[in-house]
Amino acid sequence: MKIDKIFLSSSEEMKEIPDKSVDLIVTSPPYNINIQYGNKTKSGRTIASKGRKYKDFLPEEEYRNMLKKVFAECFRVLKEDGSVWINIKNRYDGNAVITPFWMETFFKKMYLKNLIIWNFDWGGSTDRRFAPRYEFIFWYTKNNKKYKFNLDDVKIPSLNYRPDRYKSQLKNPTDVWRIPMISGNFLERTAHPAQYPERLIERVILAGTNPGDIVLDPFMGSGTTAAAAKKLNRHYLGYEIVPEYVDMANERLKKIEND
Image (cartoon, rainbow, N blue to C red; front, side, top):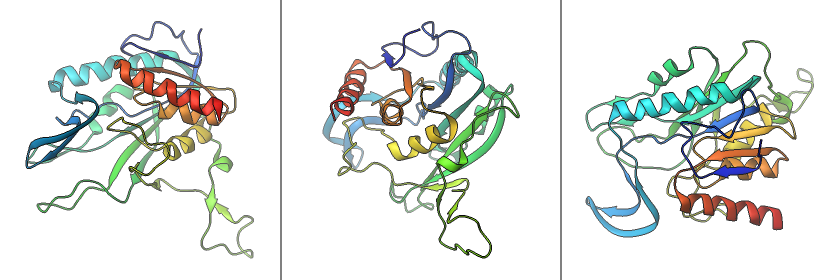
């Protein structure tokens, strides 16, 4: 099996990856929220364009069938002690919020260990309801008891440390993660219109893998998962259907290697 490779193809069939060969899967699938990514708009009109554009919109049945195939392949290639982490958010159809809990039907053979809230400090605005400032991360394990969870590697400083009560100044970061979204002045920023932060994925990789393990992202995008894995001495695999994004990810990985 090839490793440290991003395949220019759909992850609905991961024929390059054998059964039970991947240690961790982390991804952020398309949200299917009918947005033309890559354009800057004003009053509903496009006024500027940057980077490769794509429209994140499929008929709902087609969208869910696509995810069903991808996650079935994820289950096949995942090791028995492996886990799956999925970043996804609520959608709003103009009338009501659509939560992503329908996705749980794809993971009936797995165990939900945490539903993590990723809280960030900026985003879209609205005057008809409270502005959304969070997304979900679903963490599933293949085995109920045998799975990797390196809590010591992701503990954070405690603000209320008391040496008479606690052995360490570090604590569990809990299931609410306050991590900034990527903004234009971040060094890791690329031209990808829907990039998530390396810091978010680094915590997942540290918690769920050991050095030398293989991390898979079936929706690789700009290569954030691969970049985080490489910096943490893990191997990566990924799938992406947009050639420009594959080139973007490979350039990002090349820079890490050169640095």
